[in-house]
Image 1 (tube, rainbow, N blue to C red):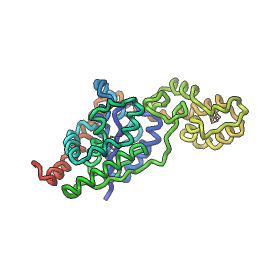
Image 2 (image 1 turned 60 degrees about the vertical axis):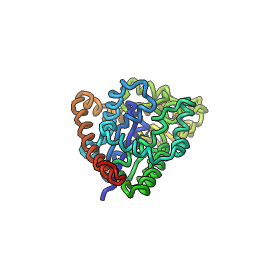
Image 3 (image 1 turned 180 degrees about the vertical axis):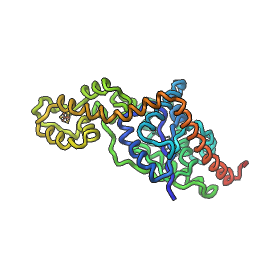
Image 4 (image 1 turned 30 degrees about the vertical axis):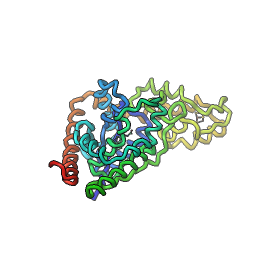
Length: 327
Ligand code: TRP
Ligand code: SF4
């Protein structure tokens, strides 16, 4: 039997190269091997974006468009919006009964977020419960496998602990899902740090050529390479990394010429640009097709929601049975 995958993104809008290389390209391949569920987690998005709820509809659509443009196939995979499957919220509530508070309070991802977003003393209940909702997302599909990045490993560990605790209290309903880590390291942003949605350092799949060009030409490079003939350190340079992704054949030459000081950074960027530009054309074209046909996108998400909901309802029947609740 095929394993079952569930993974997702929060609905935070357009995707960048880090999302593509770090997650999506991997998901696209997994579609052959697994039964796949891909969720746009709009309730999770509200844990921090609760003041801008009216943007959600558009942000959800942008994620869906980028997913499909990247090769997620709505025929083979179930692509859906979290809030279209209200059963998640019921399971979330029930799991809330079996999870000890300290498990949530020691969550390293939460601690990081508190530090990064300056939330000391301002953590809302929803944010504390974030991993419980994520556990519900995964367990409600009885998923076996969850492809995620390193940063999500603590959440997955918590999901496994919740599954174990539920199963030992009420009998086995949930498999313990395993993380499937992408080998691809984080893609560097144009400032040399990790590419991220919130830092102004990303290259979007949807960036038009003029914007792409500007981002490339302004990008950070090895700060020790000032003159053309200075030897550079390609490992520290985002431009070299983009060569390895979009100009694979020539990237060994770029690396050598950079190290030997045979090429300047401006020239190196100019060489990269057409490859990046061409590499993104197929995504941009597919995006535009979908943009022109919002009806079709709507149908895909509705159909995905229906398929997901069927399984979620089955699981909830199992859960209520196991707990001897009202079925
Ligand atoms: N927390 C994930 C992130 O920030 C998004 C997410 C929500 C998720 N539910 C999930 C990921 C279930 C994997 C499985 O990227
Ligand atoms: Fe980066 Fe290219 Fe400059 Fe080397 S030559 S530092 S790879 S931009």
